[in-house]
Image (cartoon, rainbow, N blue to C red; front, side):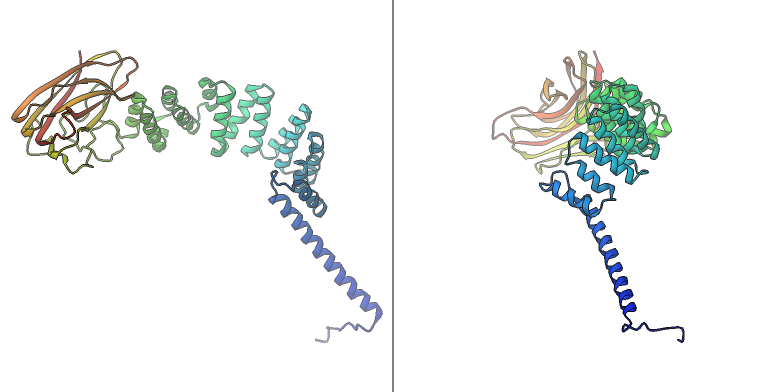
Length: 422
């Protein structure tokens, strides 16, 4: 304790020393707080702020060594003035690529193309593995009509950061006039780029290009990206691109038993209507209690099961159930055959099979009505020609119209559907 000494405030020199210490500490504290306030103001103020200039001016005054403050001031000035402000920001933070990129943009707007390119390149050199500086440099080259140099930078931006991938694809897509080859060159042989490119094409309805690029990926890489294939398959089905949707579904594992120009699960031996991800199997509507569609393991023509439909005084004029989408070829003659059995089936509007163009749900053909009463297995068929541009048909059961008050009761069974070319 003997080493501690008290400073006597009665000594004038000591008083001055204490005051200087307090003033210095107060000044440093205020300077620090003011700089922090200036930085906060610069970071939080947007270019849409009606008081932009006043806040930018205050930010520069309070934090003159803060590059963000000078960047905010640049937003209030013309291209020449903005270049000066961003030059200052770059000097204050010479190793921060962000200010170099912003400086490059300002120089380009001011017509100083050579200097702008230099700043964009410096930004890339400062952060070579970052996507943002390459994105800015690639955009600059596009505006200068240097597509190959632009593609090189944009490709790396897309590879390095998935957040830029969609933007890069969209930019090249628009600038190339929707040229699929341009995007394919951009993607190269990178599996992730190709998978995302396939998704990009599918989202825009370019089904063939989507499948073509997906098939450029190796089998092992496809397996690790099965979720992308599933999304593409479902999207293409909704867009009515049925052949490509089927192929994507087959590759991700949902349509392994489905083939084009054939009825899937024709004898109902496999589960029906379950949410397995398939869009090309049988679908049973179970929303109306007056009709029950189910698989019957006790009654069958061949195999071990059949489909049973039971009407319980169903009285709606329209009916649509047991649906399946089938991939077919346009301008082809087909025959659809099936076996039917009935029990106490009675109505003036009997069930029948209808074939629709799955592209627009327009009618193609209808079978004869199922016979009323009780009858053993009987073969029925309907022939039709698919129209131009038709790549998928919808097979479903409907009923003949017999008025607004026309009940139907009884049971019918289906088995052994077959679709064949004529």
